Length: 329
View 1 (cartoon, rainbow, N blue to C red):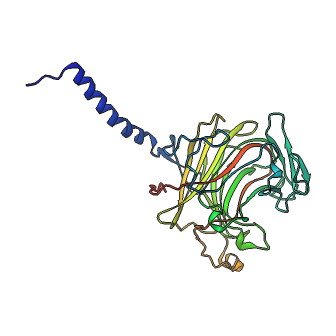
View 2: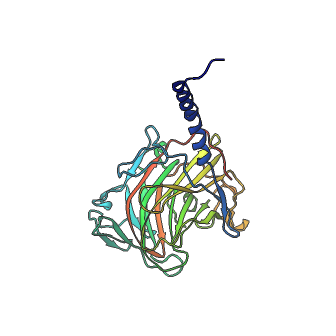
């Protein structure tokens, strides 16, 4: 029998280790549990992300997915946000008339530069559930539909200063146009949200305002975000030959550019609008009550209600969606 020398044994161990490391990483990167919030859908919590590309954007923030070849990218102008013709601040109305200044005040709300270089938002005062209303719209309608927002990764850092309601939330959405009652069928979107008490959610809007579904992926993922910076990403992309949509939420809880996937859900139908049939079909949009939003849209929006908050480093990128993705819900 031929004996294995010490050097041969070391080489053999090195080869075996190199084979085991990818297997171990994959086992650490799979979904680790399911969290639910009473009566409001299911979302999968993932402790370690397997999607991190290792690349960073122009702000130095980690990209979960790479930008698609020729894909549209938008980054907020941190020197003067409203000087960007594709970016507008509103409370549900028109763009501020004072678009050349970093600090603008109008009936659309107020954006104020802070000493640390971030910006603070004061929304439009309204009676009811949408007080301090803010809509930061990024418009791609100046381009062809092939360059509208579809498979997107929306990213930013936020700090909530004050909340006026238990339902106060950051709410980022895409795949539609204007959300007005005068053009109800344009108001279609997937909404990814982060509430001030530390829970996240996804909601679908099939038309505005009567086509909302219930929540999915509605779970507590962190402590209150009042008074502290956190990173927030919402990601949406088509899967299964453009027959379903995957919706993912990532959180950088320590604002240190360390991202964790906290929700991962799939819309492949059977996610219905909660309005009764007579109301839902009154908009005449020609969509089913569980319509899957597979299309692109010209406007993506960073929204909030019932809060005052600071933001920095907002971005939207059209991403290269994975060709093969395991469904987790």
